[in-house]
Length: 372
Image (cartoon, rainbow, N blue to C red; front, side, top):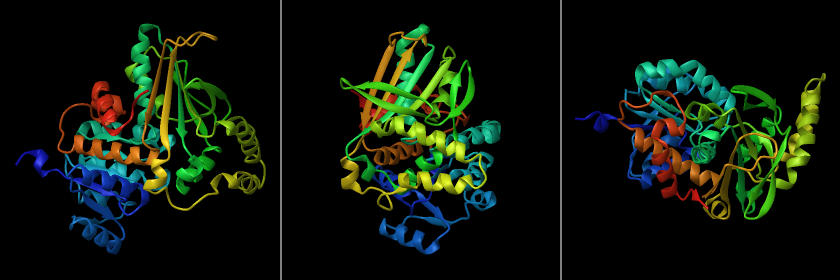
């Protein structure tokens, strides 16, 4: 048998919200993933509902538990977070086994640490490791790469903004709301002067033009600052912004400043939690299919020389399905593309380095994420 015929896709976290979306997308593509997790009863019931899928019980906190089920050329897909707490043993198991790896994290600090810890080992074993391969942050990487490519040799700076349409507050999960709240206490890496620099989240606001209207977005973190510089070495500056709630962008700069001040005071954590608690309010779980259909993702990338007041050299606008639907499709496509793969870029890499710009753009267009 060929290596591709021997290789499997293992899905860790299929009983959760995002994992369920990835599973549905894999099944639509004709894949038969092996379900993995700690709850034997839940795994067995889920496997039976989908025609008797194979399933294995593993402890995601112990690399050896996963290693027993991984072979070189397998693909390990994980949606189990928070990744800073639960993700490192999973990434380690994949790197050591030579199994390809895909996760759904939005935690840029985790991605940086995974690259620092496991990049060289993954290169040695031939594992392609794709952290944050979902709505966080494939659309921005794609839009940024397209804009930089179109701008040509004069490009020095990229500004990337994430937006959405529809009644978004009901269209995001409780986990996302919590992550947004927690993110206000963490610094955001930016690419400044050819190096990573940490800035206070929401410390700056930028306006983007969308369909003839100006919408504000606040500074956040994104893996664009980690992966785009290697493909476009002329870039001196890359900044990522979140514009999901444009009218809140400027108030959030004040909240972020207050929260980070409180955290330096005795007992400040409790006060900071109280100040940011309203950001977590909303329905439990994640949006269902009807709610996801009412919201769409929208990403803008503006390439420039970086000079103050200079006109854009290129501007790319991408629109697609909701953040959650898109994440499921992206992770399923990547898993299907990597299973049994040998050769090519190995290590902890970004979407463009892993698949090439044209292939990534075409695949995203098939999922409905395309230029507008």
